[in-house]
View (cartoon, rainbow, N blue to C red):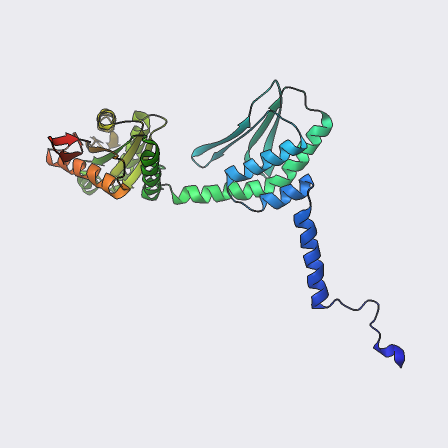
Length: 317
């Protein structure tokens, strides 16, 4: 029959027609310029918490005028703060929660009062960003764990390598001085052999806390390996580093770890080197390590500054 060759009205789509439909949907989605589509589209492109918040701040500003946006969250052992804009007298605050977990707080301020319809828009856009925000927070925690020493809770050698590379680059470009201190606990193997690794671990944890107390907020501390720590001081020279190293050694020497009838204590030796422009991180570390080696050779429990041989003799650097 002539009609037998006609397609049924509800015949399934061919692969070609499905592909064309998907392409059409993709084009419509990528070209859509409404706030919801833009926010969905842009927040799916990053796992960086800072970049994600920047995207949200931009898209929110296109929908609702505000003066300042401030996001705060405690990520592991670090406080994360993102802020953009200038504040005002009127404020709205949000606690960002998803499935029983907390992912920070967001505050918006401006000079004019926020109207109810504006608050509804803000809450709707926050509902879109909360899942990408959760993913970014979880990714930040994974990154932080990879750069943190599990025992002491301070950044590890991998984090130190990244910091030294960054600081060398900053000094080379802008002339900002950085000083490196390498600090080693004296006779630490004897502590482990005599009192056991539990006491040794407690001593390492207490030493990390002493480093935090003896340094400024802008200084960076790391566990370099074993019983050795590294401290990077911005905007400082070798004399500043020597003062900080002596303060660190005094703080470590004051530690007392109870062990039966004994109080375990330890001294520390330190080597100090200020970065020289054009010097790679490996050479910088080698000079600090050489100064530390000289401190050990001088009887331990002292600080030595890295030297180079110049035209006028040996000079501290």
